[in-house]
Length: 189
Image (cartoon, rainbow, N blue to C red; front, side, top):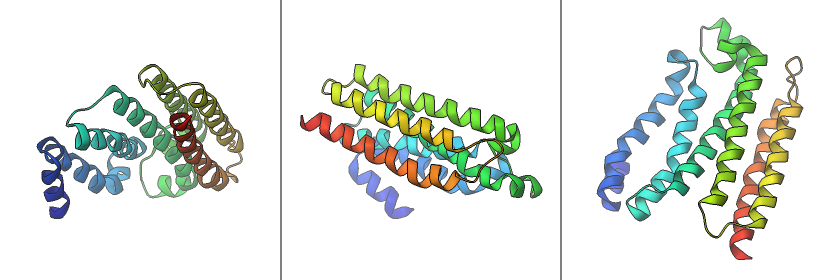
């Protein structure tokens, strides 16, 4: 922790001042299921901070681009973490642990995960109106990404959770690669 804080101080003062929040959230996340029904949002908050931290490190400010990208990342991660938590539903209930599936049931958790992924899509779509260099390739790639998110939710049914690993590991892997390639191709073309 000390080396991390010293490294942040060497980048700039704002990075150093925000670093304890990152350290706290990384420490708190493993305990969140004992305190709140929303540990998925705690994990999402960690991912929200990533583009903000990069912006602060390079520019000593936080841009609209970083905020929208952070929103997209936060709700993407929180959404798939809710899906992953479905596997622990019975264990969590038996051991008095908290999560969105425990609080709202499997059906409710699926709806919340879908909502989180809609927010992801809309946040990434909003970047079209903030970032000058994004264009038609970005929009096309974002539509492909959206189809992967829809497919992820088609795989998981309230009464059939057998495809969670495929949705969580495989489809989410494609989502991240598609987004990376979309931005790269849009930037290069």
